[in-house]
Length: 328
Image (cartoon, rainbow, N blue to C red):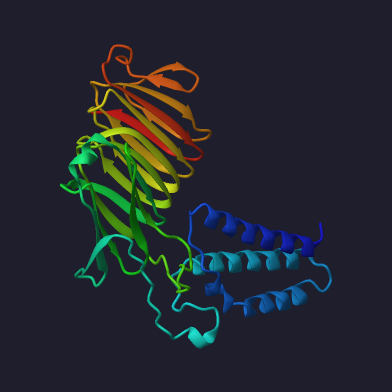
């Protein structure tokens, strides 16, 4: 195989891999960060001419190694927070803050470390207790924690230096839908640049009266939800490289958990008094289901599943993930 074809193959794999990881929200890659390093490729071209004048195999190997090391450096550099908002040097010393578009009731404080803290809240009205409440939660590079209960329907505190979060509510006769998300677009509708810089920390508080349905989606980050105080009928999680901890309660007769993830660590705890069935489609994932009996290929149950009044159904779908389910 010609050396030039190998070089182009490596470059295409690099670009394609970065674009795929970006689309899956596994990484946030700023291409403008590596724009200033374009002379590196002139240097690589010069090294290639010097080392491969006579078609030397050793020279080709050395040149390829230099290219791979360079791409690894650019991969790391591309994930760093940009110092400016444009690709061109005219803007490189400009300090352009993110434009934050608040859609709901938001207050702002500043932490001791200098980061801004934003408070989101949706009030609770008596009619909400009779409705199903759907919570749509999404964000990349975010740490979500279900901290405590609240008299509001939904309350969240966000610690982040820069970024854009939004909270929106829609209502029908039978359902409330709350959508709380970190927008991942590089430009907002006002044509101002915004950044997802650093890891956000979000502490969430929920009301205990409604029946909850939760749809959680993010690329990389942490999620720690203790649901023992809440009536959760369904929880759907879709994530990339995540660290997920969920503790399930027994306030409803049936609870469904569906977890679909890539390279993640998933820990789920279920009450001993509830019967639990696990269905897995996990490929090369590791599994540790304590207190469960394997019933069939991909199926596991607690010994009391058929006799328990409350039942929990867990569906696990993952690639190189680690799944752990335990009772308490």
